[in-house]
Amino acid sequence: MNARTAVAAVAVLGYTVIIAVHAEVWGHFSESLDYLERTFACAERAHQLIVPVLGEIFSV
Image (cartoon, rainbow, N blue to C red; front, side, top):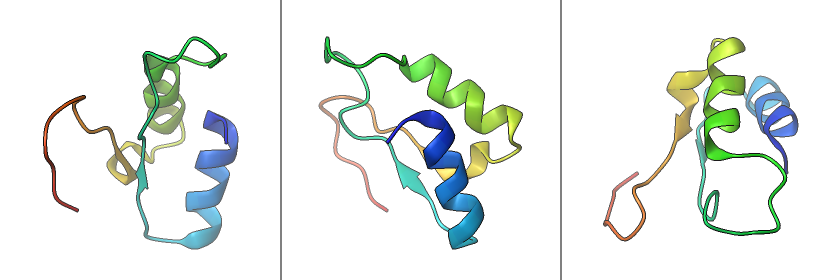
């Protein structure tokens, strides 16, 4: 799933969140984590994106 399809998914699903796991430090990704965050912000859906900090425990 790329940034555009992730934004489209939250638009269709309504109030839900996307948790961006494995979104960085992988050489095969063509889009950066920054691009993902900017895409959600431009679509006014930044509040629906959760980017956990690598190596830290988080709750949903």
